[in-house]
Image (tube, rainbow, N blue to C red):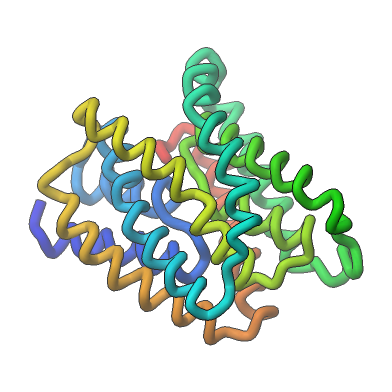
Amino acid sequence: MSWLKGIAIGLVAGTGGGLMSLGGGTLVIPLLMGWAGLGPLLARGTALAVSVFSAATGSLIYARHGQLDLLTVLWVALPSFLITPLAAAWSEHLPPTALKRGFGLVVMAGGLLMIFRDLVFDGLAFAADWAPFYLLGVGVVEGLVAGIIGISGGPVLAPLFVLGLGMPQQLAQGCSLAARLPAVLSGSWENWRLGNVCRPLVLPLALGALAGATLGSRLALALPEPRLRLLFGLVLIGLGLRYLLRPGSRG
């Protein structure tokens, strides 16, 4: 595969990660399989490695603009880091089609709730004393989804931050990008060790991801919060439909 294709796919990953905290399994795996011709395991491992660059770059830019809460990230990252590999092993005996259809329904519901948040959740949020327990639960959910479905970050974390804690969309996305980093790093190392990363592609993918994450993050920070939340909700609905209509697809 040419360097230009690698940079282009990395650019998609980074832009999606920066703009809407999406990337990895959501955007990159289909491109790596369809455009680059990688097998499922190689595509998943390579996409995970690219997520390190896009998530780290996006997190840094959001943090520089005050859109990252480190305590929130820590509460979520720990259970997610521990549960993801356990969920991956457990899910080998579960029907993947049914799981992905269920995930599609949940993501579509999350998209609708994001769009109509002010009507449904106006003034509702967990009290500060209960927030750590809620965030631990979010980390558990994130770990289960990452391990079973192979997708982490935006589709799960950002909606739960917005709906449960009343976070503005930009802050939710900044926390979502940072919270996935521990699991992404450990998963990338494991896939690298097992040979499930297309190593010649890592550098061009990383270059594209760095540029895309910078562009996407700055665009997200410049958008009015209601517009960004509307865009994010619409993307979640589209993602949910993809899993409902094509549950057998990879990533």
